[in-house]
Image (cartoon, rainbow, N blue to C red):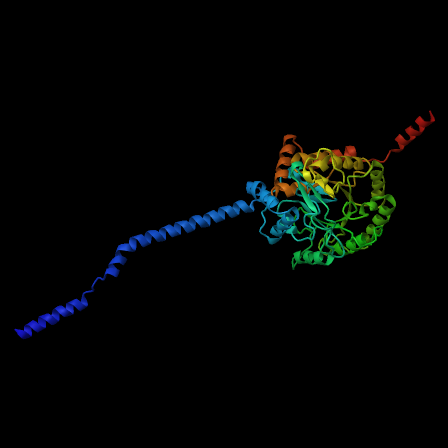
Length: 458
């Protein structure tokens, strides 16, 4: 019996070793498994919602038409930083490749023609925003058909002392006295070269903008240390940037460089235009476009009628390809109410429009239809752009309106303009062609000359 008892005891002991004993920890694991599964599902749902939200916001942000740009981001930037810092931040964002884009194809009604080139729309960005060619592609992505960078001076220079830019929000205007701050030609050239694809193929429609339906203009400035009356800085600019631009803009109209506007006087301007045209004509065709750049003169809105007539005559005699009307004004309209209105410098924005429009009309009446004019000054709506077209401008440029309304400015102007043209059952090109034909100077016919002689004899 003792032996049997020992065997039974050993058997029970063996059973206890083979049958697993559920510890309290293991029991807790079993009881919490459903809770862990639910937590994993919640985490997955939250991650999915977060990813979708980020994706939707990215889509919203990258669309230049989104209201957040006009009504949130741009006002916050303007109110948080001083005007120049906000300007620099905007350039850096567009330079980074993280800027918004215009996702809409331009309507056929907006197609424009400029010096034999067909553009997808007539809206350009004026010089002064991208002074050193840092954000060309970012700006083109916003829907502008042409971008004017600069002013670029041959040698680097700091410009005028700060502060030198002032918002006038009560007047939808801006006053600046930048004074051509520039990193210099060498720095800008390096960026332009970096944009060129390694295996670049030149086609009939290739432009220096490297984007179909768009052109690149470079605004040439003068170093403050250079002799005022000398054209050498502009000649240097033509030779340096000619291979990389569709258009070279000769800027003799900034009010912030001492003596510069004096180059608009007949004798100095004639010497300047002769020199830059000669330099341009001596250039080899561009390796990017297989063409030489066009020359455009940028004039001030503060000219007397007699000065405008002299400029028109010199433009014709020197075969200058076009004119931008206009730069900023040194005048201060009585309508200004913002406290910053007394700051020194050039005024741009809505108050400039009447003056710039009048100068454009006067110039249009004294140059032939073959010379295109580009309107600039106070353009922030489609109606503003159409006003310039009806005054004889082939293209328009925005500047201050872009600063106030943000990255969606170009698309909004194009949409408003397209709606106006559609309502009139016409196109931008048709409006421009008719206005230029009616308003441009025409050479008197021999018959009219004979009639005038007869009238004098009577």
